[in-house]
Image 1 (tube, rainbow, N blue to C red):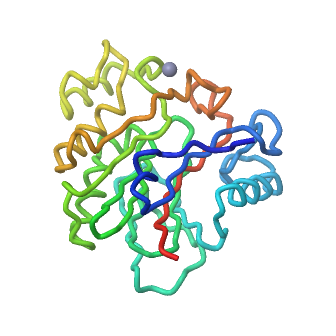
Image 2 (cartoon, rainbow, N blue to C red):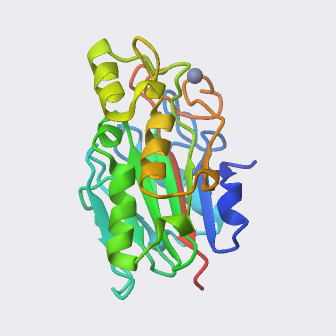
Length: 253
Ligand SMILES: [Zn+2]
């Protein structure tokens, strides 16, 4: 059974592996059924470790190379120095990870929030971003491109970006005041009616404004809330559910 989606545009470069897990083929019980990879959602921790083993084996990842942050809905970017020795995952509070390390695999956990993959194919360097509404409003995607410029000399015109499975405008109802804030920040296109938000367009706009070319940005067709057969949805499942893992790594070895 295939337990993940591949980001085709990224893998075609031959430079990276870029995947998002799906919820099938694991051992967690309801409401976390079944391939829950998030250890912070009150699922049985033994089940989560079995699920991670299943998933990492399937994508061919050595678990010691997996790194993630402690996600806090911020716009903080964690830079992992490529020259640093391989580190054990000791979560830093942040919502994006950037690195040019040849074997580390940064990942983010989501269940409606937008996982954003970034590849600077010229350096090469990678970024993995977790963008919910707070991170989107505080422009974590643009912050990540800025941090990549600063640390790697990344040219945004050499970047590819992909927005993975996440809640879309068909399902993402918010308060009128939040929709107002988004409209002020990103323009009327991010609001499809009075209280429905389009997080994908808001994040894609940030990436465009940061200089990523329009044809280098792709968006998953999947809405997590519409497709709870494939994905976890915090919103559609009343807050008690598992997490997908999106990760990216350079083919450095
Ligand atoms: Zn939907």
